[in-house]
Amino acid sequence: MAAHLVSGGARSGKSRFAEALALAHGGRVVYVATAELTGDAEFASRVAHHRARRPVHWALAEADRRLAAVLARHAAADTLLLVDCLGMWLMRFYGEAGFDETAWASERAALLDALARLPGEIVLVSNEVGWGVVGADAATRRFVDELGRLGQDAAAVCKRVTLVACGLPLPLKTG
Image (cartoon, rainbow, N blue to C red):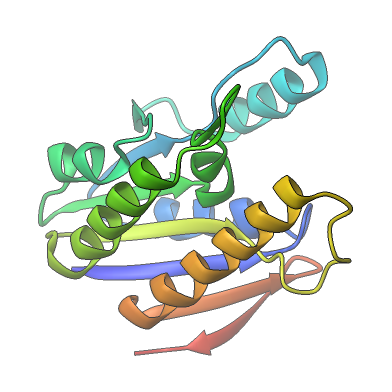
């Protein structure tokens, strides 16, 4: 398996870069969507924009909290799985009762294990949160901390890591 982490700030071009990698792939592509749709019209517009950019021949898998299980179900030697994005996946562990730490720890470990053992290629899109301002509330700070730690651990497992800034890919790890 060849995992590739693509990180960048908001509107940096990271999803577009990851989609270009998938377009260049010679085999099957499965787009793994992690966002949970809510009643937010602006967010729905963003999702629609992403959908419109995707080729119709790409398969779609919608991931809930069990991202590793979705990856395992669709992974194959000739397949590229494009996961967009880890930040939206992390949001699934927040709810009315706060952050579900037990479920997060289990699913996070399952994802990191899957990245190291699944066949084919996996491209993970994530937000770079380490350069932002410190969050004003505990929940925001927790989100930034968890996504930052996940990014570090995913980067350690991935063969390639690319930072995208201003639409330009900057290779950080080229394994």
